[in-house]
Length: 275
Image (cartoon, rainbow, N blue to C red; front, side, top):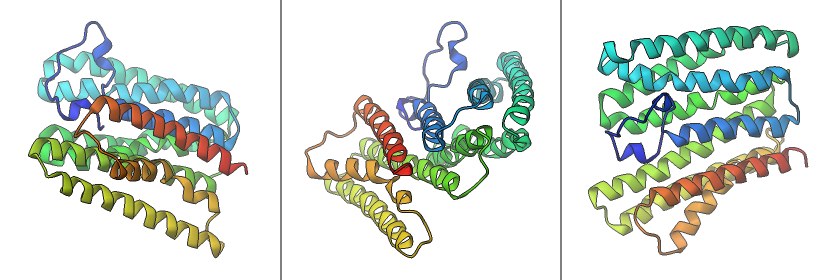
């Protein structure tokens, strides 16, 4: 996902088993945001939802050993087998618990749904830098599946509210990917500041158009009005950026911005869903 690793391909190995944890802080942010937003909107918590946390973490931990195994099969085969085995075991236990506590046997299929997106995202980012943006878009859609997974673990039937939360979380982070990739491309190609502002305005304008479209749909009764809030944090960031004198690319600052925007999204969703 979109982090400093997008600019830094070859990072030094971390000591011990820390290398198993992906450095894509954006991926962790998406998972945490989707999970917590779902809990807040559903206003519920079950043992199956708690058990989902380590299952999702292990699924994400498969990334590093899988990429290493693709580069050098002998080095990471054992680590990948260990993490994959733990993931399968935990997923099985999770499925049993989910079926008993939440009545959601379809959760068994969640890893099967996520697996193709997971594989495509890794392949796109591994073999060619030119596919990195597409990889991040695919990964965002896949990581957003934590929303329906958590929803099912809470024993909630699939409904419009679940679809709104899933679409809202995915759209929010897709625009985050777009904003950061624009900054990265500008940094690498020494893009003119006017072109960066034009790209940012395109992102802000399209987000505004989507939000306005949802508002209009809600006026005719097709969607609840709270479906229109998911892009508000990203829109606010884009318009504030356009209205101020911003430095080119500051990954630390943008990382902090993403955390603030994610928390804002959770708070807004929690407030409007129960209003």
